Image 1: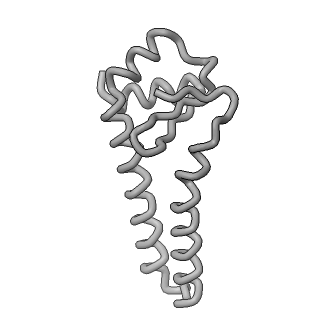
Image 2: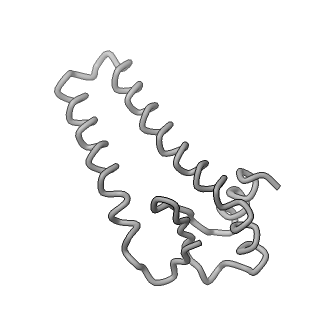
Length: 105
């Protein structure tokens, strides 16, 4: 099984994955089976890399959309990028919260 296949399996099981540095957060933890926990542990570095890469790629694609849209003004582009950067800075802080039903791997 590849890390992407595992990610899809987890998603189809209703589980959400996120990262906090080198921690992998899985929500809701009560849906995890022993088999899934083992698979997550075996693929943890690859899952973290997959999630971080997807986040970076999404940001780049959104920047390109803003740059390529002829109706986007400079002011709109600046507001979009400022908001995007603010969300990036908030994301790690939000993951540090210890929420009920969240398992850290």
